[in-house]
Image (cartoon, rainbow, N blue to C red; front, side):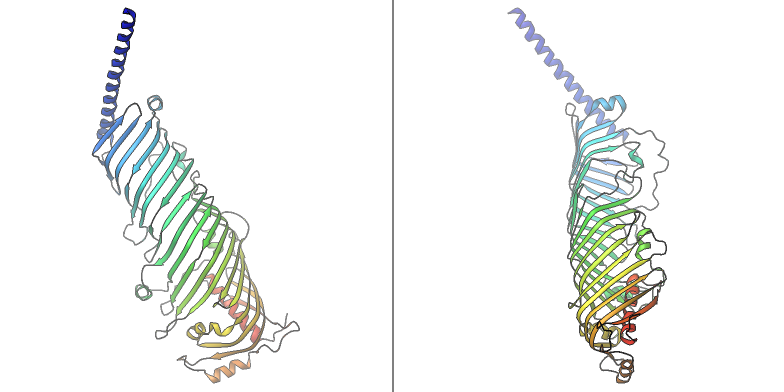
Length: 507
């Protein structure tokens, strides 16, 4: 009995000792955390919080109603919790190893700074920082631009999960100065200033290491067409572009690389509705317009998308050419497209295949290929149009060219190749009862004299080769102050003129 009492006494004293040691360790840990937050916080950072909670046994630290700010940065959070602080790596090597960091309802505000640099810290000896899990719940992010009208960003309802996050000497050289195993990001509404004139917004977004999607993505002008024209000194398109959804697979943002990178294996674009308006009464923008070869080649990051599929699209274009004339639209509907091997640093041809209906009527195809690495910006285009009632395009021709056409195009094929300075090609057409009408200046009637003169040089479709087609060959000089699509239009227009007004024979 005496031995049993001694054992109970020893156990009781041991338990008391553990409690005392635990209390002392807890008080010491809490004191050290408070001391660190009060004395080790850099002078240019202001830190406030309501309650501090710690648990030395679980290695946890929590702060309620956190407010942290420095020049150009502000963070407010309902709560931040650090769980599973590993003491041995900290005491042995100074490494910070944490099981989980979580922020509840954080609001993060950043002021965008130009010419920021981290030089001067490259030679510092860094310790390793490792989080098994980092979680942001229901956050908000706001980045303020520097007053030039671009760069502003707002994102709502951010849920972000990062796993196995590592920061050390090696990762510091990466574009994003840490590595991670995987991630998952979901947001609701977002807004970003693309420029002083355009913005981009979306309804919701999700990205993880395998897939991603963006719903109701819009790229739009900040002003109405009339307001934009008053602000411009040279031509600039007014945009109204909406995508129902954009999906992508295997996103790679180059988190482990030392240069910017954006790779997708697949991209799926559903229901794009693209509206473009240009006020031609404004002075021309005389800057050099890059062809798409050079546009891709000049990107300052590594872009690679193996395949892009576009479904159920619509494209419309308007030009204001007279102050008192309402511009009509050139419309392409039921647009479906596949784009292969888009790249800025890779090899091989970018191949574009498009199927659509012109003015909701004639089936139109366009196949276009080019190599971004070719310094002379070579390209090849093939296209066709079938069973098109040409009167469908008259509203656009009437307002833009003071003209109308009569007749049907049964089949039209064109092929042209070009480069930075020009192009040449061939066209063949099978059509009948074709007539070109020149309108009066007020567009209210036909200029019979000019129409008659044009009719002398225009074949109505009767004089053809044995296969029923008329042929035309042409060359076009590129205006380098205008876009690729202007060159595409010049080729089609010149091909039409040569085909209907030439001898129609195959060369």
